[in-house]
Amino acid sequence: MEIKLLKIKNFEPVLPIIQGGMAIRISTGNLAGAVAAENAIGLIAASGMEHDELIREVKIAREKSGGKGLVGVNIMIAATECLDLVRTSLEAAVDLIFVGAGFSKEVFKIVKESGKNTAIVPIVSSAKAAKLSLKLGADMVVVEGTEAGGHLGTDRPMREILKEVIEEINGEIPVIAAGGVLYGKDICEVMKMGASGVQMATRFVMSDECNADRKFKEMYIEYGNRETVKFLSPVGYPGRAVPNAYIDRVEGGEIKDKCKHLCLKSCSRRFCIIESLIRSQQGDVENGIVFAGARFNEIKDILPVKTIIRNLVSEIKNCSEAA
Ligand SMILES: Cc1cc2nc3c(=O)[nH]c(=O)nc-3n(C[C@H](O)[C@H](O)[C@H](O)COP(=O)(O)O)c2cc1C
Image (cartoon, rainbow, N blue to C red; front, top):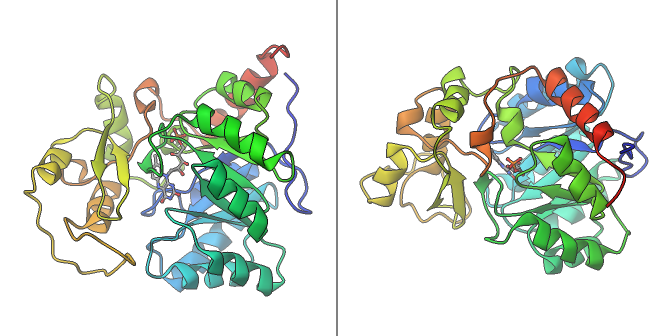
């Protein structure tokens, strides 16, 4: 199948592959820049970063990209510092701001009023949210299904929601499919349904450039004969992760953290999600939460980003044109 490049706003067309944002510090400038260098879209997860750190990571991504592709950020609406992160991202002149884990009209207003050439891309899990996003001026929407890793906005499969969103958006802006996309054949399938591209995260965890500790990546392989689990995050949404003993302790009510970060606008305080994510990112994977998409157990190798993207491109080219 011929690869149809993705055109957003007045940016140069790029490969229709987005590396999804992964907090806390799992997707940083090094990963986003390596993805952009392949003429795709790399995202830094801004949530949990201070102003100077985010500016630095955007600079790293830009340098690494060699001016190719696009560099963006992913910001959780549920985060206390969400609007500050949006302003910092605009100051850093990122190409795109992806927003998930909630909805905020204020974010659209800040981005539009900045007058900058920054695209605003909400992550949605329903046709209703996609319609509202279009009305507020979204430049593109990501449809994320229940197969995704991290916090989930739905228990419905991506393809089901994708169909409804494509109908609702009716070609006005690009629609991106996220959740359970691993191979070129998955990309061909959703593009034949009318998607303009894909957002993938779990495959990129298993890259050399991903900023998670080696033990985080090796856990995907070690637990590769198991299925992911869903747990209720203090954010108020379910989260999908590798099924370790820590999640059992969380579910059994054994973990009692004191809140040190005040990182969420609304938090159940059942346990500290940010500490759990920091510990696993740093390699203490048995005492933290290791977010993963439902198909994590199909990935058996840690590869350079360049190889991952070039494999995807050649797999897409090998798909048949027939729907
Ligand atoms: C380790 C990990 C961390 C994630 N963190 C975030 C996040 O901070 N914000 C967000 O919007 N999505 C987050 N996600 C979701 C991804 O950006 C992406 O949309 C989703 O995982 C796509 O499905 P896939 O992993 O099956 O490719 C995360 C996913 C993973 C695997």
